[in-house]
Length: 234
Ligand code: HPA
Image 1 (cartoon, rainbow, N blue to C red):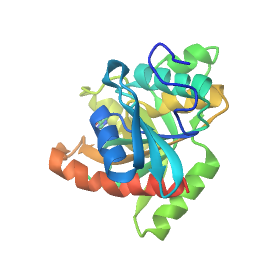
Image 2: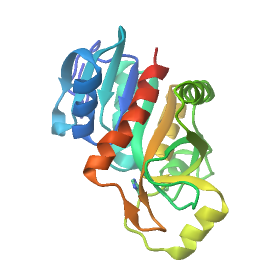
Image 3: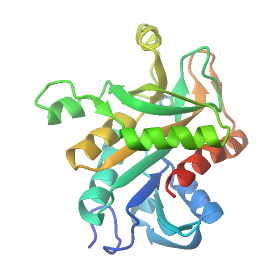
């Protein structure tokens, strides 16, 4: 059965979906890592693929940019296509001196300036948290692969272009390790629909140092994150 934004059949998806923000990256991951891979969605060019990683059925689908986009795709995947686990594999900004470009950060939870979780949670503050077992497992896989990761609190913002220095200082004070635009929304959808989610990001921008990864650097440094996520599904 298809949904307004996903034109796939019931069994097209694995119960585990890896989700980058960018549809081109979804294609890259599917072609590089999956065997017997088929494309299962192209509505709005939000490509989705299903294939096998070392005999494990895995789907890859991009979620686009921002909570509204990520929340609607994760909602449809969980509610209509029986997806049980979502692993966001994205990019984020850093504001900390000790977290630099290419570092991998994992979101234990995510604060936000978006109002959506309050709207859904009767105007109270919802703690948007990752699934503990997925977090624990991914952390141990990274350790086994000798890849350093940092685990902590994210800040999910609605505003990519924001020069509010006061807010940046608050984020620093409260030990935020990554700034993205989706995690708090994905975690609340997973909670609402009783699924599991984890967000892993590679730092692509250092907001204080005003540094960004080039597109070539992006590709090579994202492979570690993708491989951690894929290994964790086995
Ligand atoms: N801010 C918010 N989201 C992001 C950033 C950023 O600097 N980099 C990648 N995603």
